[in-house]
Amino acid sequence: MSSSYDVIIIGAGAAGLMCAATAGYRGRRVLVLDHANKPGKKILMSGGGRCNFTNLNSSPANFLSNNPHFCISALKRYTPQHFLDLVERHGIEHEEKAAGQLFCQTSSKDILEMLLTECEWAGAEVRMETAVQSISDSGKGYTLQTNAGKLSCDSLVVACGGLSIPTMGATGFGYEIARQFGLEVLPTRAGLVPFTLHPELKSRLAPLSGVSCPVDVHCNNEHFQEPMLVTHRGLSGPAMLQISSFWNPGDALTVDLLPGLDAGEDLTSLRVSKPQSTVAYYLMQTLPKRFAQAFNDLHGWQGALQNLKNNDIENIAKTLNEWQVKPAGTEGYRTAEVTLGGVDTRQLSSKTLAVNDRPNLFFIGEVVDVTGHLGGHNFQWAWASGVAAGGAV
Image (cartoon, rainbow, N blue to C red; front, side, top):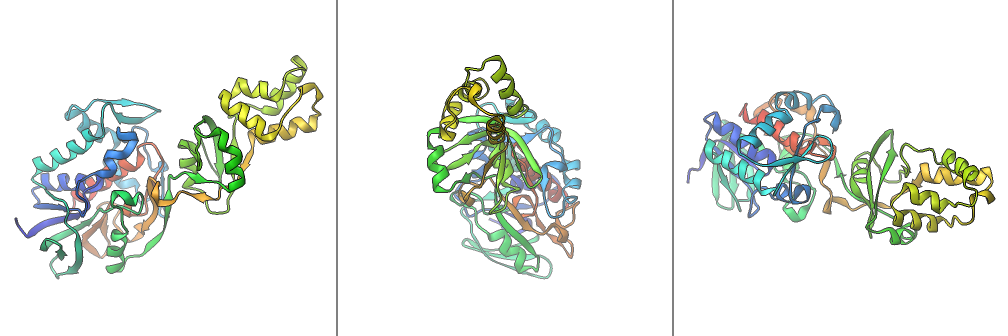
């Protein structure tokens, strides 16, 4: 095996493999290294095992960053349609679930096999169970000491992800490399992650565990109208995962359990048309029955509507349209889909993802401070940033 390469990529995930194939097709001698025993572990587990590999509606507006304009260049040059064309060339059957969200019809394995096939066709070598122990600047490039010996390269690409899901092999190694070469790493935290609740509310919501309902959740001037899932640990589902990226410890969430409905108007009208009906009856018409009953019991709403004063209805309506929930925290990196923060993109070229004063050192994918919304956007960033760097190394 050779010990000298044009390009070494640390990380055999989505961004790293995409970068390897792109560079390999340009005639570069490419080696991908990863300490794990298998490549693409997060690809395999994503989308419930069916990989939400892109979002047709993905745009820079779907990404969070301290430098929000940074992602525009890469995303414009490699679009969801480009990746979809690649998927279709490989004959991978796929389907659109929610608007724009594309999933494999059968298994995430199809996407991983496609990437590995592309690497093979491009002549890029992928070497697993190879841990990088140290990196040094050789003057002309970089020297890497690994558990399998010394390697050298002209260009080095760091694609080893963030801190999310450590059981998949995630570490902070990419941030260590950045700091070694003088780059600033912005504070990191778990994103797209379920919330935990304080013991009292958790026990009160216990009867609702496993129940999902559509909500509109608000926090810090952001909101998402998607399903919420009550779990035995707290609150999850797409709505909660989305808003978690905008939540800070101590913040309250405002949850509209009846998006598009004015509970006050509805209850007032129902009191006139069916005075003997109850709040529980109204909730049964608008929410999943199990959720409606348990939520009604949780608040002790009893008796006929005709016995309720206007003030009572106002209070009930406020609870339904503006339910205030203050999470205890989140489940953290253990279950987080992404890592917020990371390598400060102001130090990188938006065109190539190279370090501004080190044109042969690149950072791509989750390790940088670009984080997408739920729904295939983070994969699109992996493909786009991988192609941007792969075209420049």
